[in-house]
Length: 520
Image (cartoon, rainbow, N blue to C red; front, side, top):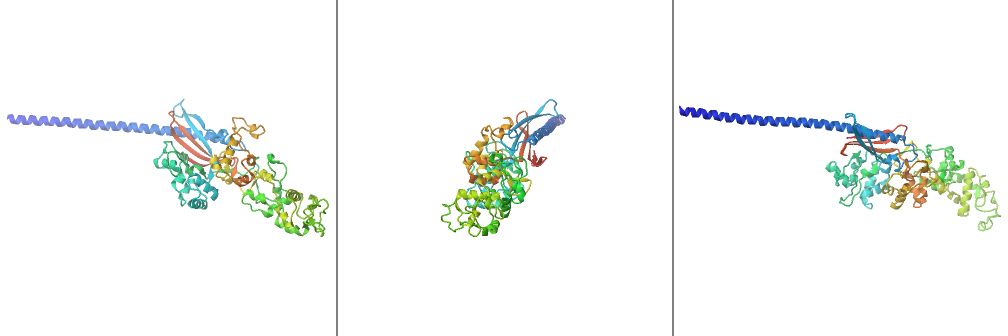
């Protein structure tokens, strides 16, 4: 009996212990579930707050973008330079639509797309120079092959599409630091944040051989597909296409005022002679255009001579004042005929006649009648004076020109005829104080800083830019731009970037068009 009672007591005690353990386990589980529930609620609340913050700061960034867009629309200067207000970083605030009285911060930066090389318009030479800039060996056969492959693959929809070109490497395309950002996510090798727009990374610089002290940019930092300029002169008038204009249009071309403008450059006969010779692929081809075309020469060659009526050409220079203006067969002696006499030849007007006389006075007598075709149509000064008035292609816009007012010296040095010294001279000129007679003086210091170029002909005024260099580089440059990259960020009170939106705009027409848009 006693044993039975003890057994029953032991069982009861064991059951009580099990009940206590079970209770403790249940309490523990309930505590864990409660903690998880609270954590889930906290996470959900935090997510909602983050979502709300991102939404608010997105609209703050968008407000900054729209504000900058309005600023760009009101920019009426006939040139575009890094000394204008739009080129300065913009910081502002917008009211918080959720928390009354609170202000949200945004910042905006604007980049001129014409400060980069356009891979859709660049030729093999410029692409080769660009590849050398990002670390490719300039003397390597593979570099030349890659440059040819890039040109053959034009046009591209994004700069990043260059990755598909055979021979392209990630180091050349992104640069070493950009690649670090690409593989690690959002920070580069130096810990700074990066952003990528259509393959256009804004990270720091890098090199093919990554080191802590050496860095080169990648193509995504130096190239674009968006650079564009209006096909108008500094006064807003449509450019004259030398390759398609009729004689009347050509005779209306005048040089820039700073280059002795106000008078037509081409006479009627000169215009007709130019039309017979055209199909120009670059501006410098105009320098060697004959004032007497082959067609015109064929029409007049039987009517001209280099001998006097006695046929004695050896003593012609000594007897210049006594020489008749016609040969023995009634031909006109081009070595002593005056302007009026030369105009009696069919197809030659005062303009051509004057150039023949000027050439003879400066270069000496013609050795034979064929030498009359050595007379050129334009002087160097006239060529410099009309480059802002003419074009070689039809269309309301021109793509791929480099803006000498915004491009860094490293980009300017890549252009044909240029080198680092000449590029630096351009940068120094645009940053100096403008002279008293400069048109820049019409703007206040708040509007314009420095001394930007207001036309292309002004480039020839630099001591470092000789006429040969000017003739080589003039096809590749402009003094303004109509395509810009706008990056706006929403920033919290701690200075952290919460949201970013990026757009590339085109303002060649009456309305600004957003060519590319990305937000995160």
